[in-house]
Image (tube, rainbow, N blue to C red; front, top):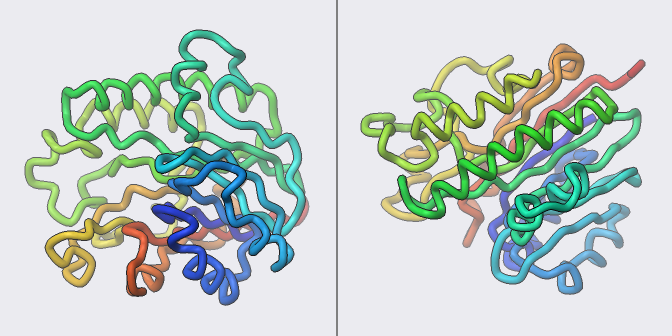
Length: 269
C-alpha cells in the first residue's frame, strides 16, 4: 500500500498538478492539506471520474483536509470532537478544518493532519498551536484505544523535529516551526508509540518537503522537512520505503510543499 501526503496550497489552483501526478504514481490513498475550499466546491468529480473515492473536510480560503482513495474508506471522521466528544476545547479547535481520519483495508487507520503554523513565536497563534498539539495527544491516545492498532499519521506538521530537517538551523530556537516547545509537543504525541518512517531509510540532512516561495529557496534547496509520516511499530517494521518527490515543486505556480510517499507491505495484516 502506498500513501502520500501533500499540502497542495489550494486544490482548485493545483488540480491539474495533482491529477497529473496521480497518473504517474500508483498511490492508494492521497492525503491532502490546505485545500482552501468548502465541501460543495471541492473538485470531487474530477477525482471520481478517475476511479477515486473522495472524503473532504473543507473551509473557504483557509485550511481543509481530504482523502483521495482508490478503495472506499470506513469510519471516516472529522475534527477532534468526533473522537473526544463535544466540549469547549474540541468545539473551539474544530472551527478550523484540520483533521480527517478513516480506515482503509486491510484495517489501517490513517490520520491526516494540517497542524497550525503558529505565525510567530509567543503570539496568540503560536500558543493556539501548542494547545492544538496538546489536544492532539489526547486524540491520538483515544484513537489507539479504539483501534485498529495499525495507525499511520501523516500531514503537514509545520514542525521540523530535528536540526537536520532545516537547511540552516542557526537561530532556529526563535523561529516558529522549530522552537523547543513545538518540538516537545510533537514528541509527546510520538511518545504514544509512533515513529518517523522517513528516518528509517534516510539519515542525512538536506532532505526537505517545503521551500519558501521567496529568495529562490527551491533552486537553492533552502527548505524544511515539515511533512511527515509517523507509523505504529507494526507498520514501521513493514515499511518498504519513504521518499520525498520534489518534481511537482518544479512546475509553474506550484504548491510550496511537495508530496511525501510511504510504501507499506500490508499483506497478512
